[in-house]
Image 1 (cartoon, rainbow, N blue to C red):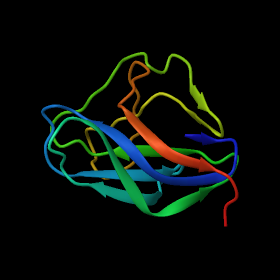
Image 2 (cartoon, one colour):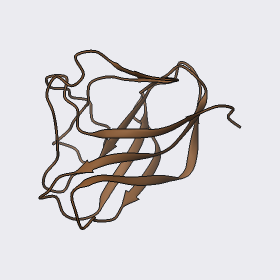
Image 3 (cartoon, rainbow, N blue to C red):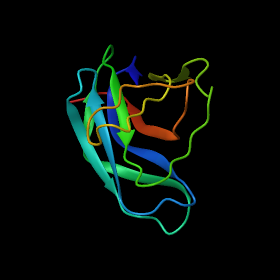
Image 4 (cartoon, rainbow, N blue to C red):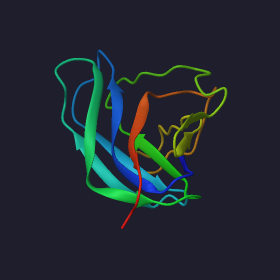
Length: 129
């Protein structure tokens, strides 16, 4: 996530697969791999979009770059070539999804086929403190 306009990252949405079970941990990382925020999403009874709020919004400034990740327990949803071009929203830009099967709880750094892992940040542009 590249930030163009100051604002706040308030939480994240992820798409829970039909066969996925258990709680999920969503993490926000700075570009150097330092965890900036963590949110927990309890297991949902049905598949679909789930939301988890960070304990406190994370203030962001233009030029900052972040990685958003979540831990899938057994199954995840993905679509290849979803990021043939970056996705631009007012104030932020997202590029291809990253993954890691090796080190859970660490920032993912691998990419494959411009994949989307159905994860979206709750961003609110405006003044930060």
